Amino acid sequence: MLSYQHIYHAGNMADLHKHALLATMLAQMAAKPKPMSYIETHAGRGLYDLDAPEALRTGEAQAGITRALGAGWFAADQPLMLALTMVRAEAGPDAYPGSPRIAAALLRPGDTMHLAELHPGEHAALITAMRGTGARIYGQDGFTMAHSICPPEPRRGLMLIDPSWEVKSDYQSIPAAITKLHRKWNVGVIALWYPILRDNRHKAMLDRLRSGFVEALCSEVSFPPAQARHGMIGSGMFVINPPWRLANEARRLEQVLAR
Image (cartoon, rainbow, N blue to C red; front, side):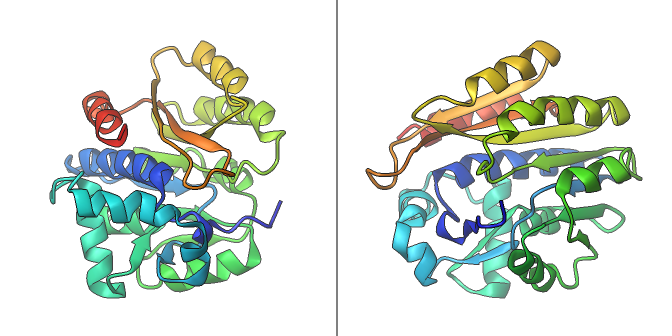
């Protein structure tokens, strides 16, 4: 359960889908003057070096963010590109921001950030990556953290749930966990990222979520695996209480990434 390290996959096609939607939501919500809370249950290390041996080994960044930048898939003012530009100005041209650093780039003074990461090494790296951002960082189970602070203050806000999915029971337990969180924080935007694998193991979970949250937004993209042996062939985001303009950007991204 504590073996997953995202450095092998940072900047891949799934990250582009997940992070572009996340950045869009944060930018849309930050456009209003009211303060907000950002909560992340599985934060990872927050910042990745795409020139690291682990990232180069899989080739996933080359098939994702490197290809996207070379082909001009995103406009310079797309919120993910704004965050990437800010991070690379500080951390160098091979840096790729995880969702905590994307959030830090787009949130404003007065907003709050709560990040949980259970993996000891990733937790230590997260502390370093988020230094100076004001984020509260928890070395504990992300759902435990989320339940303990919900509803947060400020009450307006967004939660990203992005587990490693190495534990197969997550597919059965996460709908109930999200339902409980929504009951405690019914105004919060709750976004779940999930992989689309060859065996479609996400479908039963998604059916349960859709039956409980009929007005939620579901965005999915398909793409070829970065290597023939890889099992992930797509990316999904399920968003409860989506910002009202998110559906348009989701449809646009689905077309951009279907290449």
